Image (cartoon, rainbow, N blue to C red; front, side):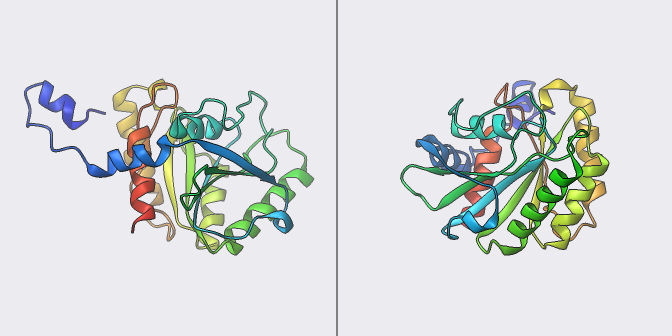
Amino acid sequence: MVDAADDSAAGGAPASAPDPAIEAGRLLFARPWSFVRGVPNMDVLPPAEGLEIAFAGRSNVGKSSLINALTGQGGLARTSNTPGRTQELNLFRPDDADGLTVVDMPGYGYAKAPKAQVAAWNALVFSYLRGRPNLRRVYVLIDARHGLKANDEDVLSLLDKAAASYQIVLTKADKIGSRALTDLIADTAKRIVRRPAAYPTLIATSSEKYRGIDELRAAIWTLMHE
């Protein structure tokens, strides 16, 4: 995927003026962030305050790495090579209590997970989605190397059922070629077009290369000010 700046460098139309939301998003995540708590069940979920966004995705899709890239704090969200390690809702907030909470949801799709664990995940997540009045959007992370899987579709259906607004974020976009990424974005957009709770625009990211991080920060800042 080629951005406007690349077009200009190649002799195309001049790049447009910088989006002010990019700088605002950078400042939003430039402050120190801290882990608030892990939530194993709804009984210990903190009161709904300010605005919440949540990150969902398959095990090892890169949720924790993306949160670390967004905040610029490499050790904020614990990363692991062990699928299914995150079993709670993990909450993060800026130290100055700016009114935004980021929620790292348990990963799904781990084939070796016991049925009881899967059932507990479904119960916790659905209760959170249906019962959290300040949840503004769920960012569903999809590995760009694999695209939408059957269990991703199941989660999108759960979000539709819960009437929880969500947006697709592609992770590890640096691991595939630009043509493959363009095709994946187009195919995924077609597959979600009839889903009632889906936001139509996709964001392609790479936590390793910091690709798309500015755009995601800007999208979150814009969401806070709509």
